[in-house]
Amino acid sequence: MVKPAWTVEQNARRERRSGLIAAARLEPREGRAAVEIPVRFHHEDEVVRAVAKNISVGGMFIATASPVAYGTTISVEMPLPGMAELATISATVRWMNDEGMGVQFGAMGARETYGLLRVLDDSDPP
Image (cartoon, rainbow, N blue to C red; front, side, top):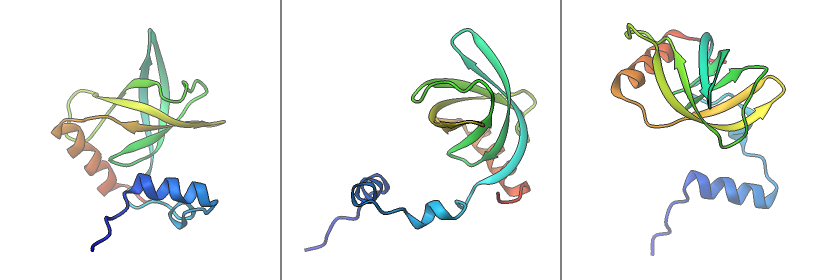
């Protein structure tokens, strides 16, 4: 009988339960780039200017003095290569610290995905 493969989420739960720290958390994640990209994020009726400090196709760290609560969905506007206008991407806050917040991108269109891949190709790893 073949054992089913563990999903990333199941592995993370197993590691938390056992008290282990995943080795991947000790090293920079692949596909993430250090950047300095001006962004704006919208939360309720407020527009906040901030700076993206690192980015991947799945999300980014936004340096801001005004992070919003965990689980909050925000709209992020940012310039991306190949797009004449600012890209608008839906994102969910996944963590916060004294310097800002990490967000996970929601569904994106082909143009936004292509623009993010170009940013990653042109940037250095963190």
